[in-house]
Structures are given as structure tokens and as C-alpha cells.
Length: 169
Image (cartoon, rainbow, N blue to C red; front, side, top):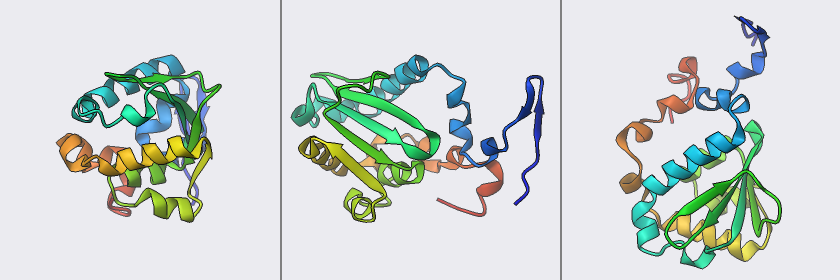
């Protein structure tokens, strides 16, 4: 497929921006600390009830890196007693979970079981696997239909405009 060139005031944009979901094309120009802070706020709002119920107590003070391979982003999540913190400092993590954006979306929207992705080698866990397993069990126990707002359940913002009809989620 021959993708069109995008002419901007800064020159011709890479054709690769057309291959990535629109919601993530700007992450390379946004400073990591800014999107990390916003991600922390969003996660704490969405998971407030789960945090209050103590669902994350098994992994309190554990550093878990999540690497989304196809957008080349890694962020560290640290569960605290009353909130989840994000950090761009990915050194000294207890566990690392690596997967593609599609894998992450399928786990978030509970379309795929993390075990299935793990055995298909689409989800990789390194470091302290007990911490990774605890996180997997936590994610399995959260009812995403209850947690996610209606606009996010729609999911059309996660795919390029021309791909909505071709690849319904």
C-alpha cells in the first residue's frame, strides 16, 4: 500500500504515522513526563473503586514496567496504598510486561485472556514473574465494562479513521 506524504510546516512527515493508531501518533513529540502524569490521573480515576477495595495490595510498592513494543513506549507503574503512580524511570523494576498495542487493547477490553497471549508469545513477562502474575490476576478481576466510560468502550478513537470500517473492534 502506497501511503500519501504529509506535508507540514516542519517538512514531510514520516509515512509511519499512518500505520499507528491516531491516539498514539503524537506521543513521540509529547515529553514523557507529561503523558506519564496524564496516564496516572486517568488510571487512578478509572480504577478508583478497585484501588479502594484493596485489589492492588499484593503489588504495593512493586515497580512494573509495561512496554508497548509497536509504539516503542515503556512506562513504570507503582501501586501505592491509595493510588497508582506512573514514572518514566524504568530502571530497577520488579517485573516487566511487554506486549503490542493490539495485545494491550485486547486485555483492556477483555477480548483476550492474558494467559492466551502469554502462550502465543504475544505477552512477555520478565523479572519477578510472581509480581507479573499478580498483576495479571488483578486485571482479570476488574470488570472493564463497569470501569470504562462509554466513550472509551466505543474504541473508534484507537484506530485510524479509514480503518474503522475495515477492522471493527
